[in-house]
Amino acid sequence: MARPRFRRGHEGCSVRGMRFRAVHAVVLVIAVGGSGCDPVLNVFGSFFPAWVVCTITGIFLALALRPLFVALRLEAYLGPLAVVYPSLALLLTMLSWLVFYRT
Image (tube, rainbow, N blue to C red; front, top):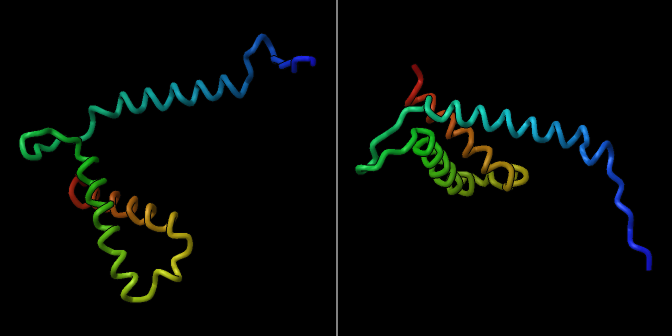
């Protein structure tokens, strides 16, 4: 039985692969450069970045709104719930960031 042959383009390096690595490098530079720019909060003696607190706030607010949607019988009209609730949590996270940290 013959072994399958794998083709390589231009000595094993493709344009797509180079773009993929470039995008990862840009994301890494932004993450490392921006990590020192957020405020840090003291929560029970531990220091947390403020975005963690806002993320937890947004998730809990989205979870708290679900019973309201069920009681008002709106959940059936929301669409795919796997998209709606994470989007709502993200929206509430961003709003909590704006409320607490806009300067």
